[in-house]
Image (cartoon, rainbow, N blue to C red; front, side, top):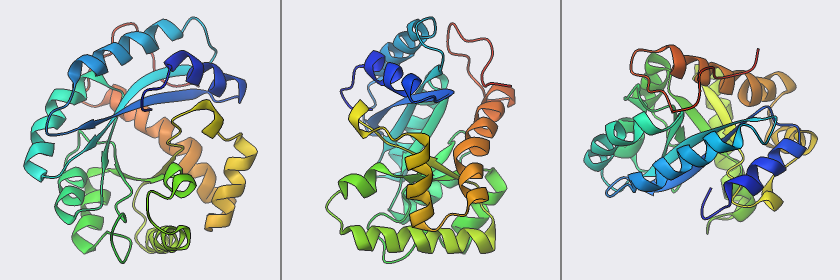
Amino acid sequence: MDEVDPLRMALATDRLGYEVVILTLRLRAEDPDLDELEWLAEETAELRDRVDALVLPGCQLEAEDPGALRRAIPRVRPLVYYLAVGGGRPGINRAALGDTRVDALSHPERGNPHAGLGKHELELAREKRTYVEIDLARLLRRSGERLAWQVSRLRDLLRMRRRKRFPLTVALGARDPLELLPARQLEDVLDLLGLSEGEAREALVEAPRELLRWNVACKHVFVVPGVAVVGHG
């Protein structure tokens, strides 16, 4: 979520029938704006009486340097229910996957001639239970990379995941309500990428629920003011 009205996004996802919505700010790890995250936490807390969906704050850190990322994680983690790291650089990929406070590594394949994950990264993902996130918005916007190239890298990632069984999740990455996809269309997109029906359900439904359960239960967790229970039964 970049410069988006949280209420508009929450209402739009509510109309589409989403049960849990995580509104995510993208921040630079070198100088994260914690005031913005605190504002987002307050805004999402106020939305819970206005929509049926459970709306939670999240953050995606973008870093040039692994050291800056490591310093930013403990500052950001207490403020959000979902912490992702934008990947692509080998050092960033490893730093994110090796930290249990990080929920997901987004687009590890960015800028790489392959899936962006080697043997060491795969072992970290499995050992630390850090999810690899597919950001569908990158396909829609293409971010300066050719669509065919991006799809090829994602299929490499999926083939690797079937062999190595690391945790996987999917994010819409929408910056505007117009970029939100109904569930049926979302399933069609994942089918085109090569996910089976079972894999799509695992990435879209089971993975987010498991992430939220873990974040509530694990010892390093934070509690955002106004939230007592996370997840739907």
